[in-house]
View (cartoon, rainbow, N blue to C red):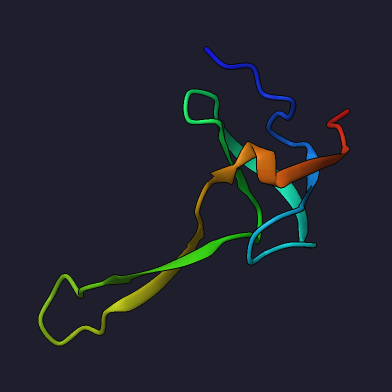
Length: 78
């Protein structure tokens, strides 16, 4: 298992990629993939069909994981 320098709840800043400069809290970590999910960063949209005829579908936005090397630790969780 790979040891990450950050953990869930830490405050981080993105230092590379399209979201460079954004700050957020780590929501989830994936040590085997060396990736983290940061709140408000790398937002992706998923289009969902309606379950019944006549209902409208919806667009769901959720954060996707980014590589741990693209984040810098600002503040640790107390």
